[in-house]
Length: 69
Image (cartoon, rainbow, N blue to C red; front, side, top):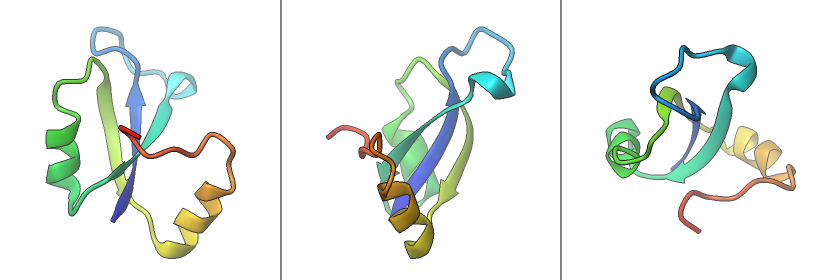
């Protein structure tokens, strides 16, 4: 499954909606996504599982790339 992870670039600053970024991670479930990203220096706000239709929409974005690839 593919998950969209919304995050802030740093753990030390207060989250600001306008600074939220996102990445795409392949994993079996949400806890696995969090394990994959546990050593990263950013603050995870939300992990969202993408439906097939939503994934196809996201793939149309030229910046779409799975984490670690």
